[in-house]
Length: 121
Length: 107
Image (cartoon, rainbow over all chains, first blue to last red; front, top):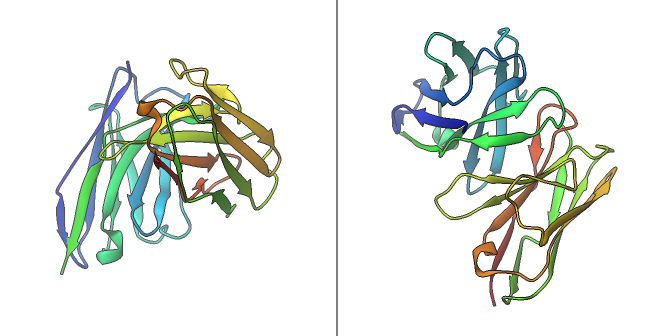
């Protein structure tokens, strides 16, 4: 059974960099079949797709966040990570990591439990 | 970006009722639409993909239909465990986008 688990600081100061890691178990992050994805959720904006990384290193970021987001992968630890720079209160959210199929059916079938992040001034 | 309008934003229903939730995409997404269920304090759970294909273990009282721009999720004979918030998501193009959610609560 595939499991994803987010970890990282729950409190980040404004203007600093938010860093989260997703540890994958029950699956290899080296698989060509998946896009390893970050999504966040706020009461105001709902669910917002942040971006993905493929094991090849290929990434795609939401244009709304692209200038501040970096997603990377550590295959030795079966983990992938998210960094969001220059955070503001608007980045306060629940952050989820997820697995999207690259091929049919192409959907997101697995999510982590989520990690709350508060940006403080 | 593809914009998804989901309606209603909330509805009240009783156990045994049939409820329908709709999503409309701002452009043709074929059948690249997924539905998720989220309960308070939990991550979204995948219910359906390709507009009408159930994930394994999802009860058959859940059904989906539609293609192109208009989609529906129907829950027949609503059960107590179905009271939750439901989201649709398009995965036809990037960035992926979600509907704003429909909260189904007990009448």
